[in-house]
Image 1 (cartoon, rainbow, N blue to C red):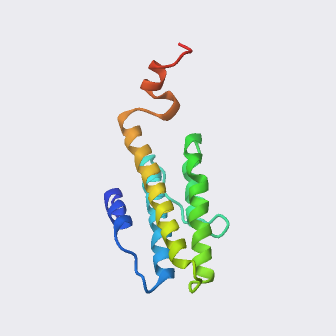
Image 2 (tube, helix red, strand yellow):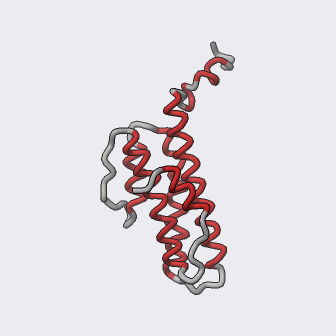
Length: 140
């Protein structure tokens, strides 16, 4: 498995233009890898189970258990699967290049969300319980 930094670099690299299905698989797998890092950071073993036919959806479900704020990226994982399906079902479609570009943006969004949450968690600031949020609260 690549490091978090290597996943970020890979998402910035050019995609294979001659094989859109391979590019879509690469982007979907990158999403799975970042979710694997999230699970490992929380002392969970990433499972190989599928949800609705996709491992990325099962990994998200596993990662959200015990952390409701992680549900924020549920739709992101679903969007990745949606665009993957579009490309896989019709790689010669006239919108395939646009779909791959969207899939890259979504993969990068997932990467930034998860890596950002991991960084903030490492600093001890957790979403709503974040110290800056508590200090600026009108309900103190």
